[in-house]
Structures are given as structure tokens and as C-alpha cells.
Length: 289
Image (cartoon, rainbow, N blue to C red; front, side):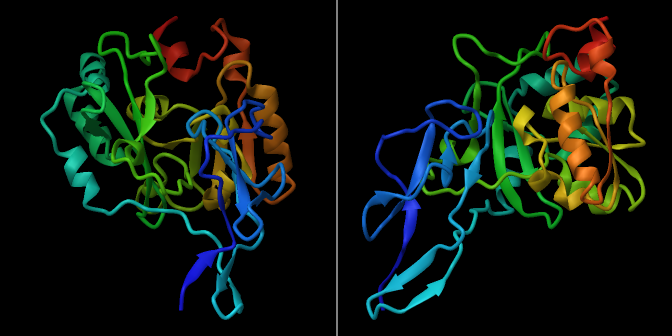
């Protein structure tokens, strides 16, 4: 019996305005029977690292040749566990790790590398892989980022050096469903009732884990990553969120909404009350002042 999904992402080059980030980078779902787009909300934004919006149809039926239908929701794609060995145990230069070794004790850096499974790829020379591994140790994705080994800043010229491992492997049908960076440490680093700290940047989470190792530091990867879907796995923990400068009011509004849903969460206004450039975070406060 042949099967096909009733709905799938449009495979043409046509893009629409994303309902989340308002950029023309939105790929809509289409009805494979009618070849018409479903609506303005169901689809995926191509700005995976900056936006991450992905809303699937409520039900994705599988149509069969006998015209019978069963419900089958589109499932995310995962990487095989062996992929960590390929990217985490290399002798290639890693610009971000080089930066860490210039500022922190080697033993602490190695511990952070192992704790967060920091990887290296030749996608760009010396680039870093930040693996998104959930609380069940399932590898959701690998974000690739390039850093300046002297300043520790992201390389953004002549373009923003951000990509994904599934793009490096040209896995066109890979369905990315992100999770908090560092989430795999949840079950063996802390206990329920302990404090979990949330920041935006993976770099900041790693550095803060070295500076203040008594807390579990996680990163949501983007300004829009601070949302219930991402935070749900840590609902039973005490959460302290540290937004980048200018993002406090947005994050605080979300935090108040989550409190009404039973979350134990507070949003720090630390970066708003100190002299930082817009977008500055805890690491900028600690090391650039």
C-alpha cells in the first residue's frame, strides 16, 4: 500500500512573511491533494537560528490508495548518537575553545567541553558546533557558529556565520525541532528544586558554567527562543532568566505568563541597569567593564 503525507512543506522557492519575525523567509505547508497553501500560520521560518518559528498542521493525515486515513503528526528528525564522536573528538582548531583557554583554567575548559559536548567542524575553519541534546539524550540538532579566537566575538563579516550540521550534510528533509542548549545535563547535574539559569547565547551559558558552576546554565539560542515550548522540560525547577540588554521587558512578559501556568520563574533586569551596548549579556558585563 502506498502512502503519502496529506500536508508537506512547500518545496518551491516561494517565501512568505513569517508570522513571528516578519521577515520574508516563511515556507508554508501545502495540501498535497489540492496543491494549495493551508494558511498563514502553518509553516517553518528559514531563519532557524534567529527565529525558529515552526508550526505544524494540527493533524497531518496519511492518505492511502484505498482512501483510508490515519492520523500521523510530522515527526522531527534526529541525529545518530555516533555523530558526537565525529565532531567532538577532533584535533582541529576550534576558535571558541582557543578563546576559552586564553581566559580560563585549562581543567575548567576541558570540563565545560565535555559537559556541553562542544564540537568542531571544518564547515568554516575553526568553527564550533553547539549540540542541542534533550533530556533523553536525543540529539535534536547541531548549530554551527564561527568565533574570533582573540576576542571571542561571533564572526559576522562579510556575513553572519551561523548554520546547522544538517545543512552541512545537505539533509534537505531534516525537520529541526530545537531544545535548550545544555538540556541533556538536567538529570545528572542538578536535582529538582535547584536553580536553572537561562541565557540567550550558547557561548554565555558555557562561560557562566565555568564562572558559577553551582548552577546549571542553559541557552535558548535566540531572543525568540524564550517561550513555553522550549522551557517546558524544566518546569519543575526554579528558573532564573537573564535576557540580553533591551530584551528584559519582552522576557518578563513571557515569564509572568509562565508563572500563571505554574512555572517558578523570575526574570533578572541586571543587564538593563548597567552600562552595556544593546544586546550585551552577562559575559559582556563581567569581562568588558
